Length: 111
Image (cartoon, rainbow, N blue to C red; front, side, top):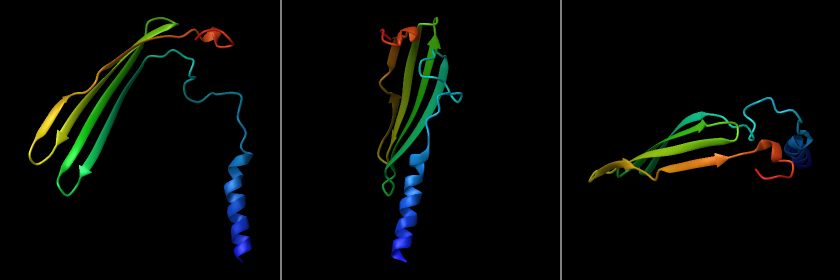
């Protein structure tokens, strides 16, 4: 009986090895596409539940296309730390970016 269970587990775990990579990627966005995007990412970290200590973060990310090769972006994290003694809110580390991409040159050029 143990051999059959072990054999079935081995077959079940090896089943994903039969998957094949498709050449056509119709889903989602290609990594080489230059797109305008906006994201809001909330995060809640409970540091000590019994003491009521937590940290909340909300990050807004916006990237905007200038033309086919250039885009710029900014990330703004808003952070709040809460405890029974003290609660503090503020702006985290702001990140700005200016990106250049030349997708036609990815076959051996600079991108």
